[in-house]
Length: 68
Length: 484
Figure (cartoon, rainbow over the protein chains, first blue to last red):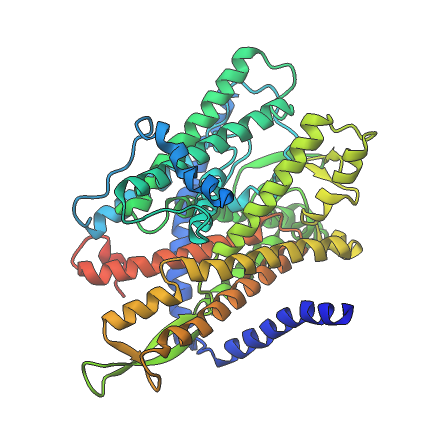
């Protein structure tokens, strides 16, 4: 029964897709205030880390010329 | 069964290394919030400082893993040539093996636990050694190296790798927040993100000197070139960071932050105190960005295996039939990336360089996406049932705290969680894989999965920090920064 096998093969992902979309629809979504608060926290943290990291990378540029 | 017996003994392999490898002791008492912040910042600075150039290599070209680097915090031609890939892959592989009961470990037994940890470390260091020598013998660091050059490069790369195996263990063991290797990846990606936008230094290209930073480049172009050309070039240059990539990255971050707060709120009530009800959130991104990281571990293995066979065994000779099947590596112009350009096995397991390429070879795009999607979802499904927050563990926790899901009997708590959590984990992983692939369609060369991994890890830290902060009180120095 090749048809059966194929059906089973496509059944699992389709079933899953249905479950997944149902789950997403049931989810509580963040409201605007919450969203902006998190963007601020993550953004500030990310950019602060990045700037310090970039500063350290700047130190590496002259070292690179010295070693290589 | 002999098969399982063989694997049972796998942890005993680590026995001879037990006295050789130091083990980080667990902190004697709970560290203060400030101490943890200091440990985390200190170790991540070490990681950035270790990006020194390799001494003794005679050639600096032919990078076959350039699109895998961002995800693992690896920097080309530095001591961190392979980033934390060996540490991450070793950790994930052994956790999966033990979670699937392929290695039997009694986590209540101290010796078993130590052996398991030592095995992970040994395998990580072993991978650093293997990767270093693959790169050495395929001519990545130049052909005809002297004996001392081999020794020197081996010493540098394996030495740095080993040091970071231990440093990441420090963070893992509770001196910092969460996972050490994820901390390193996050700091490296955020540094690269800022570098891509505002880096002031310029690099010589075929069109003269160009600034590395995308924004700096735009300003420079606007001043020197006709308006239309300036804008177009800033968005489309392919060899250095361009504005398309920057906007894509920012877009991905915004979408991720939005998705991060998707949650299914299970109504729960306490059995002890009547009329006290609350909600227990099940996040959509239940396993965070780990599934995507796992997908890239798989892709890394596929590509490094192919690279080794093609370049080490068959010397990248296009007359060999195996090379034709796996794919011949070709050096590209400016960045000296080593890529496969003709349809072949390795070609399908690597991302496209730009949007144009993704559109003219849809089969590659589909296969690449399918690989990520399947590995991610498989991992998410497994991980959601073996990690510390699996449905079973949660049900036990619920029971201990006398919590039950409203409208359900005690017995069905585990069943209810079992029904919800894997769906959340797998849907979350599938969504992340899709977002990552949308970025890769535009040719972000590994930067979109990298930013997803970084932001996912950053959320993890944020949660841990928030929890720690609430426990430790708000009077401490660093604590006041996070206080709203």
